[in-house]
Amino acid sequence: MTNLAEELRRAADAVALLGSSSADLAALPDVDALAGQKRIAAARRLLDTYSVWMAATIAQRSRPELGHAGLAAQQGFLSPEALIQKWTGSSKGDAYKLVAVGTMMADAEAAEKQVEEALSSSDADAADIADFVAKVPWQAPIARAVTDGILSVDAAESIRAGLGKIDTAVTAEKLGTALESLLAEASSLNADEVFKRARRMRDSLDEAGIAAREKQAHDDRYLKVYRLSNGNVRLNGLFAPEDGEFVLSVFDSITAPRRGGVRFVDKEKAAWAKRIQDDSRSTEQIAADSLVQLLKIAGEADPGRVFGGRRPSVRVIVTEKALTPPRSESAEPGAAEPAAHGQIEGSPVPISQETIDRLLCDTGTRGIQFDEGGQIINVGRDERLFTETQRAAMAVRDGGCRWVDCEKSPAWTEAHHINEWLKDNGYTDLADGVLLCHPHHLLLHNRHWTIIRTGTEYWLRPPVEVDPEQKLIALPGKSGKL
Picture 1: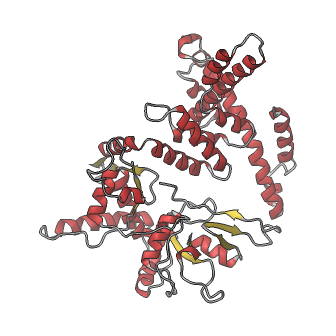
Picture 2 (picture 1 turned 135 degrees about the vertical axis):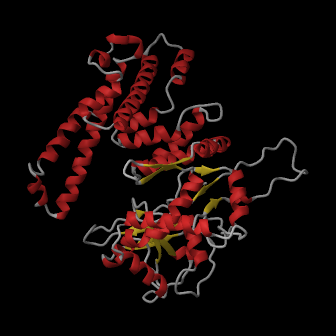
Picture 3 (picture 1 turned 45 degrees about the horizontal axis):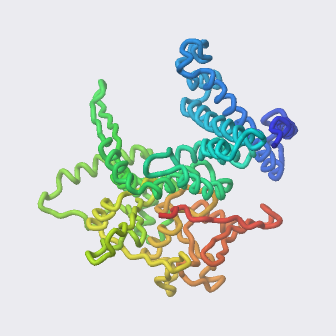
């Protein structure tokens, strides 16, 4: 077993060698600064492992059945989380995370220890061993990955929370299979990305529950409008994902030029963007004024007019299965209907088949066809710029900016030609285009990064000054699998 105590000592010594002040670290060359950041991350990961172990210990000694004799109660706290938050100065969420992950790891370690003892005991028979094996929680691989330094505590909590608990629809076996797949790629993802993947896996395992969760989110909606003592009016609201993404899209389209949005080629749109950038109002003031203006327009609108000809861009992403008509009466009796779900572009929350049907009926949709390898079939190669149809298809495939760890949604991206149009005689094919946000698009061209494609996979090649070996970096899509 890995000696974490010795690893922690070495990691702490490596960090100490970086210097003893902010000035010392500021004087480091770029290469040493990057290496130093990795050293700090390694040391912090080891310390986080100790933190969750200690959190589990405190939680165990503060069990409710111990009453006032529990460790947290003795120190004047109502819960182990409250004690940990006070002593660490962390947030309530961080304290709950430490206890949750620590308890999960302690339970898994105890169960696996029983299995080891049973296997080494001459008195244990096959039935006893099988009983102990059955008690090992499905989350055990998460605990092992954290202990082995493969997974951070943040990522472990993302997996635990994202995959959820066992219920009648999602068995331990199903969760274990999903976990195995997730752990295979978790080391290359940050905690937020891991949570999204885990949440989507859970939704795929429990598609029947999507409609219920969707209804609950809709029932939780509210908008409060009230006047303050000084006469100002304050709004406070909560919207379900379907309506919330529409609200976000409206304000994104209004304020995008102030927040690093897409460059406009069209002269009129570029002029509008320049006016927004040069506006003396703050971004928040522009948003507030725009809301009032929208309400005025709505109040003055002709009640007999049918709206809907022009709407902010909110796309519904669906699989072919979701668009397949219900089976006919001649279908084989007893055969299950294929489950399906979709998602609203930019939102990690799935939507049910019923919502898909309603949205597609209300807004219409554009067919986007994929070949057997998962690549979108070309819709044109004679245009210099990618068409709106192509960009919509790329948004579904890429899910936003393809750059490593970038979370910009498709609305904040530009289409990049892998084979440059002029220099490489590049076609405007979907397969040879990827979405990049404006900052990363500029970085790619200005610092001589390149993107290459092998089949349906995309790779980022750093320049020599960043990586002398120019090791390829995988660029998976951000949309997830439906």
